[in-house]
Image (tube, rainbow, N blue to C red; front, side, top):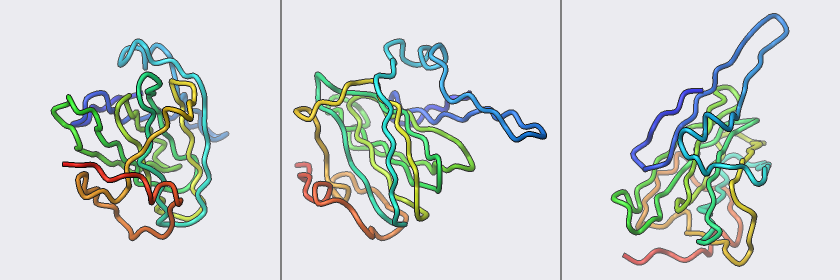
Length: 176
């Protein structure tokens, strides 16, 4: 594994090492010790998977509020997504900054989204299957979000939004 630091503290691009042979390939996607060197408290509590059928659909911007804040390790298992991490930590020098990387079944990269940051993605193909390794238990009382089109963040989505959930369309806008 190779970790690449982004401009948002704690947000890492993770590139996997793939071993190919005549049978196909083998890849390790998670090693506790490797991730522990980035964040010793990184312990996976649950794994979520989503299927998004339509190209251009947007999910997010989602996060869990403290004390149930969580890290997410995101991977695209089928298709291609524009994966986004938004720094929502008001005490951070990169508050409201965002980064995006393309995750795909082909490149097998992952994005580590740290606590206090929001996560969203847009599908670049139909039928995208995305898996999340999450460090916290789900708490509906701490679930939160920010609207994907919030001008205070200004994410430059690569495609027009073709579909989002009612909830994602109604998250509040941030006040500046």
